[in-house]
Image (cartoon, rainbow, N blue to C red; front, side, top):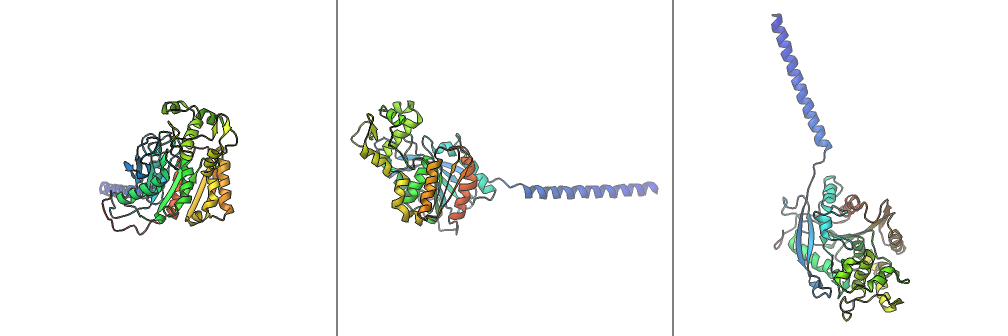
Length: 370
């Protein structure tokens, strides 16, 4: 009898222990599922977009441009939903594959977007980056017979293609524009000119805001010796940048073989050419576009405190403030390229999530879309 009671108590104890372990396991599972945010992953497509605006450019660049398109996690599983679009512009000598492909020179854009969405810091959106790497290593996102009309390619050709082939929300309030370095320059330039296309802009470490040609730089001296693509390939970064700037801002269809004029030639300033460069500096242009800038729904910008471009970006902030143009601007601990992925994740995408129009998501889908 004693053995039977002992066995019975042991069985009950084992049952209680088993139940306790089950409860602990269930609780642990609940805690784990609550603490871990499931990772969400979008997909990237690299497509070709024909730019009528780029046809016939004197550099000889193809009018068919590579374009990287990030589609948010729910894009394929929710075929009736439409999404806002952020157009993202890369810097000089850079390209879209370095941001969205396998290279990731200093930014892994899909990882940054995925992380922002997974953490709830950003809403789902489409992100688009065109390849603006040209024969002279960068378009400056300007309008030139030598380089091509990159303003119209971005604001007209590319936007029209995306609206026709993807499930976008085809309205300015659902379109944002952002860019880094040369792309930051392109962002403020296009933002000033096309408030009917983009509603919100974010300028990251913009270059070329206030070109100063009062002193002949070594890069401009070296640019005089560039006569071919082979010469350009051997040149330093500064010389390359001068060549691309000349092609974008002082084109000359009669000046073969490179079809541009330089603001300094033979040690002498060429005033009329220099004036063309000044006319393309956003800090000189801004006064003419105040009404357009005030039409934008939201403007933001930032720059690293160790970036040589900090002073000119701060001057852009002051100019916007002077005209009462609503915007936000901040500096952070970083160089020209450090921390850009972090800024994209924690600042740029949340900014557009707050300021773009996301709904209603269900719109009639017309025509052929991906």
